[in-house]
Length: 331
Figure 1 (tube, helix red, strand yellow):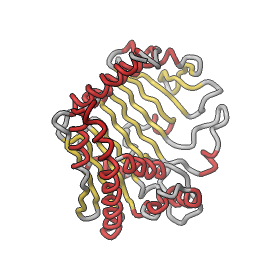
Figure 2 (cartoon, rainbow, N blue to C red):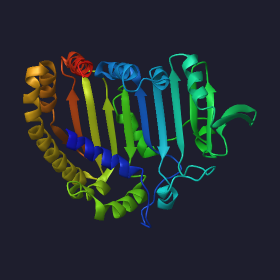
Figure 3 (cartoon, rainbow, N blue to C red):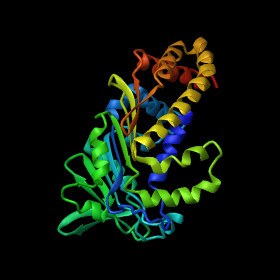
Figure 4 (cartoon, rainbow, N blue to C red):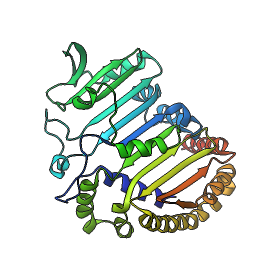
């Protein structure tokens, strides 16, 4: 499971990296990555208990109070325009080299204001086009803006995306794969096809220095059109993953690679589950069900993996967290 996660994160990372002089073109004016997170729908995964544990322990600070008051977050990002643009952090006052939009819903207006108060050293309130907005001081990115929405929401993004009246940021390809994803508490979609030039450049740069376990999969990345991933703590489906190949032949290669990774994950998980059985029996049972569900499917251009939510998953998560709390208190 860990190997699968690493590969997926590597592929997603490549989708927002930078271009070379490839002939394939990228759409850098619209979002190629979209994320939507409904925090309440993830509570059963232990996220709420983890936040409480961190707040009471090693991260005892006000910032977590604000984080815990976020109910939903939506994020869109375009591909960077060039390798040079992100090779170094932006100089003070320079614009960030990609488009960005974030919408945050808080549980109450006080939490929103508390977040803004923590940023007050780096922002100033101004009026632009008859509307009050927050912008960075001279030390921050010049193209970022933030504004309040309603009583308990805010939006943050680049000027171009913030000026959009219809909020239709996605490329057509990203929109299609986004709509195909189950409406789960966490949804992530990546359009690699519209970032083709960026992918080519990233692969050219990463290839010679890539870790040995990753190299066999690099040749597969240009064969991917889109990726969509969902996670939900309340839905009968805990997680879903779908990778669309450029064509059926590409999907066949992706399917073989996925099956190989899942096979290694199953073998690697067995010793860990055996060790859990004595101290974490509920987690061992849940982990066994998760491992048994690691079977991918291929239909046309799409390779998919669907993992049902184990019947005792909430109890298993609580068992693991309680066990960690006991260990911490005994130190």
